[in-house]
Length: 332
Image 1 (tube, helix red, strand yellow):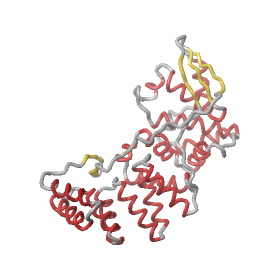
Image 2: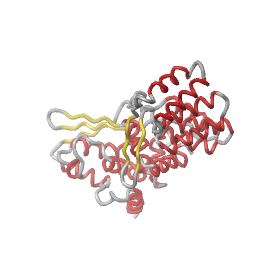
Image 3: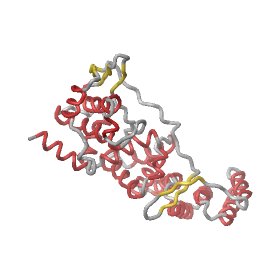
Image 4: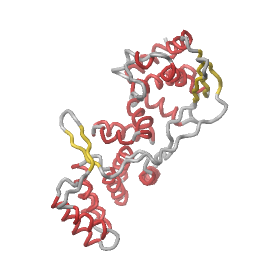
């Protein structure tokens, strides 16, 4: 009965995929019956986190959204606006008044340069006009929601005013839009600390190691707490035809793969009554599933570190739901 309750609650969290998600028992049976020999052993080392610091988004994109599509484009400065823009950039560090004048000129010449709105806000803030700067940041966000710099600077402005709730909202959105940016992380940590929230930061790093020998043997070494994830991942990576049977092409990291691996991990942890306080990624996984934030966990913890540009294609609704995951579960 207990297992039925666990699996049932999990299927609600992964609605739309429940019909194809396999349980840990089914996964183990598939591995056991396979022509491939899966050799399971204890992992005798710690798998270190990958360095994602160079996986960054840059302040050079805007997007156009309509009822059914989201399209992202790189800014192209036209010939009329370019001279003013270059002059503004030149004066930014030496003459704020001149920089402001030229940024305004560039924006008049090309109103679709929404990034310039953020730069105008920066100049206004440097000149001490915080309220004016904030209006420019808000305008930039309204025109181009994925402008992570505008969200970031607006967060810092709210922080300086003592409005930590709004500061948290904006800095978390900035972090989602540029997951690995170290400077945004510093601002986020500072604001979280002021708001008396958890500042613990981590990247999803499964404690498993998979390899295949020439004799058709797959070696699966894993920490005992990662048994559920390791079994499912071995199936996805090495079982002939399995990935295709789940409707996923070779070479793609899919949400269904992540859901099945994490579902197996979640159920295994629950059934084993494993203590996860020393492993925040597992502790947060359990809380995320229980609070119906599994999709958000997958996007923020698995997809965005590896491919931060995915954030540019997320709807505003999805970004806000990830923000809720971070503030209600990850950095509560």
